[in-house]
Amino acid sequence: MSFTAEVKAEISQNELHECCAKAELSALILMCASLSFRKEGMALEMKSENANTAKRIWKLLKERYQVGAQLSVLRKMKLKKNNIYILRITSHVNEILYDLQIMDDKGLKNHPLAKMVRKECCARAYLAGAFMAGGSVNSPQRSNYHLEIVANSKEHADFLLKLMHRFDLPAKYIKRRAQDVVYLKASDKISDFLRCIGASDALFTFEDSRIQRDFMNSLTRLDNCELANEMKTISAGKKQLEDISWIETYRSLDTLPQKLYQAAVLRKQFPEASLNELCGQYSEQYGETISKSGMKHRLAKIKELANQYRSE
Image 1: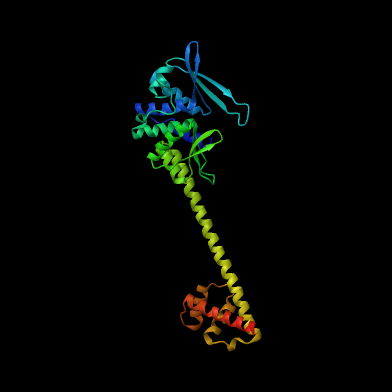
Image 2 (image 1 turned 180 degrees about the horizontal axis):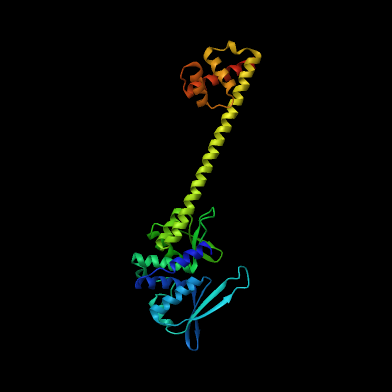
């Protein structure tokens, strides 16, 4: 089961107040259903590739409107060959659409009125229904974080954006081919969205994986920094040894001032040591303390003398 399917399975089991059930069902019907007209009257047909979503629609319709839905299952013959669950309702269709604010005297609407989601719990329920109907989220095991809801129109996408912004979720909109998509990219905001729609177990799974990934990334960055510093130290030590070798070849280390001579001898003894390590060795061998900047200054003077001898 994919992570998206796990999230949908979890939120489809959430207990709802009557007002929240209406808000969630409104999102589900608006995004999953199509309306047709027959001799007998209007018919409502809802399609979903997720079994838990189809079951949730059937359960909410039965509890709120006491209507029976005809269920049929089709199997796709292309790509993943998933099942498509189809629910058909031929009675009380007009009443259902009016009650869910999907239809009014002017016809079908792109989204319900604001009063449908005025209460915070109802807004959360509506977002949960929208995610069950057209949402997806990448597995936390993947390197890129992405959560999206495919709306059924630009107006509905704007409605979802406003709802998400109410919960400090900085969702964005994009037109992808013929789809209107509302999405989140930040991992912490995806966690907030999962918390918002009541997917507690999925939230724990997502956060656990995210923390482990961030921890491993931090370790990798530290290892890379340490390796880079080590390579830098080795490279600097190699150049300093070349300067010392030049002085030995064309002059003599004995001609150097005592402090520079001591620094040169230490570098020859410890060719791969860092400045801090050289300072420690200096204290042990000569009984004096020297700062890192002091050692760096002495090695720089040796380089300056070597360059002078080279020019001569």
